[in-house]
Image (cartoon, rainbow, N blue to C red):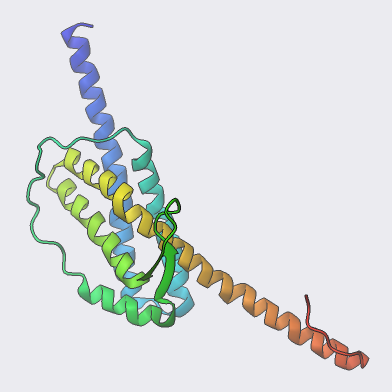
Length: 204
């Protein structure tokens, strides 16, 4: 392979990497903006449904990162991107909004099953911090560092938390819909039995 061919391949690889990073950055920025908006404006079941949608979408970005070969930062130590964003207010708003469904339990490692109790508001905030750290690298032009951090933190932290949060929110949606349907079914059967003067039995 000639030097020119090697240089062309290197430039092509860099262009592909930068395009991939731009796509991931767009998905992450969209998630962070949506999470802040939901914490300010969301309420009740609407907020749960929106969070379910946003986490599903950002997990797609994580899966794309996880499917890639390991990214490598240019330097042994990542460059300083300044202090973390202050999102404590967002965490408190999420906790207030989620209220009784904020606390949930999940298995952190399915191969070493130990039930962990956590709060959705804490986990969503932790995910946001991880994602925002990589986004700040990206905005400063540190593409390799951004990709490395997003991939590393996805595999080691926010991917697991996002998966657990997704399952918790899906469970809330399922209970909200199917438990209501079940209650309505019982009520309808009770009325029908009374009209027919038949003994009432709970559905099995």
